[in-house]
Length: 448
Image (cartoon, rainbow, N blue to C red; front, side, top):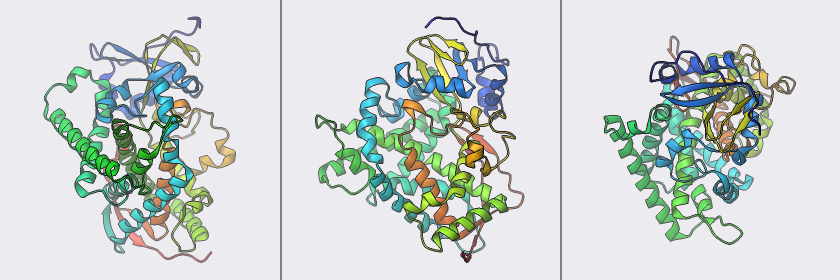
């Protein structure tokens, strides 16, 4: 590739020595979308370290389509590796291809159907503890529900409370500190601050809990119909399976992506339905028509298009903040040329809040995703699960959980946001609610 191309502009607002660290940490929800005004690729600095931020769907596709032929995992994933190990979330190149092939059976339709019943049961048990007119903190409830669904999907019903608590506590610390760990220098992580010491203790405790569980499963040799059994049973064409270290890394990856992210997303779904009566009524009418009062099955989920649009719109508004890549060679993104060995970031949050593709981007509007409207959204503008070679392998697991849990709860309950609730968006690795105080009301199924 030649080096001809537009010179990459630098974003305004850099601080001496610190670069753009301050606006990224202080006001990421405003700073990231503002970059699109300056070009399809914009340079920011973390200290003196340059980072190229892709702001345009076409440029993002240029980054994602070549996959690991032109890129490897970048800074975000390097920061995760000490906590996650060498799993599919941190692997690049041939190792990423090998792991992705091995892990496909773990997320087969047959396995997802089994996981879906676990998710439904977890949602039913959560709602059984409610009473009509009762108060819940929906953000905490949905996070705990996501943890229950994940641990049972991972380890069926054999997981002990200490293991569940270790995963919950460790992953919460990891996701909440990730943005800071990305932009601050690695040397900061070695400083024995109370936060770093707390983080290290939580990671060690979580690692021990998972190691002990893997040992129990290896020794039993039983397929319990859960994710860990599937991980231990997969093998390549030569009959070689995953090592214990690789299994551990995949469990850690699923724990990272399978608790905080769906918990926050489910909370936002309840928030939107709790404050928007029309949305809730349309979801309820669809559930009553399709389910008629019975519990949902996996096959029902495809027959809930409006609920699917509600979830798509929540994923657009409250989405992962950013992903990273490092260039293996000089590459072109849109009209810009990025040098080899450069750190590159693309931000689903930035793309999803661009008024060029999503008019009035702050407005919650599930009908953006009607087929006649969605076809006008360019490829690369909506990427809640990334795309290309590094697309989230657990995408079907995640969307199944979001739809199954919402359908199970909303088939019998109506959520109401408490008057005067001050709900703010809090940026970390994802967008989570500051609080979600809600009142739950039992509802009757309407006649179809």
